[in-house]
Length: 125
Image 1: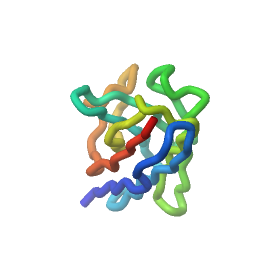
Image 2: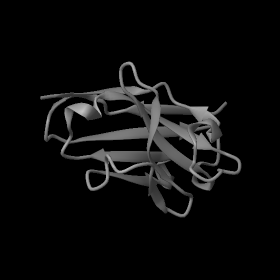
Image 3: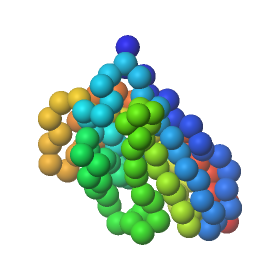
Image 4: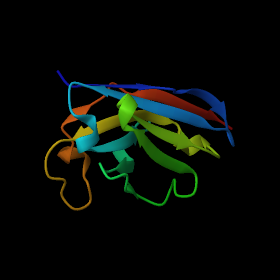
């Protein structure tokens, strides 16, 4: 059974930092693309960052560029999302997901096959 478990969320003041973790089990972790997504209250799910099996990363948009980075530790079956200079608009439930097939252009959320349960990040102003 494939499982993804996020951790590291919490309450932080604007300008602060958090590191989220996504621990995977039940699959050969280092073969696949892992993505981080978020969903703010009342909004749809949006992509944040993804990382390939060869450690190439890609941003889904400009809102977190220069503030968020993604990395993976294949020995620990874990992907990290390092978030710095957090803003109130970063408040959301953050999810990690894995794609085990062919990822189409744009890396849409619908292309990911397994999802974690999410971890809440709240940034106070």
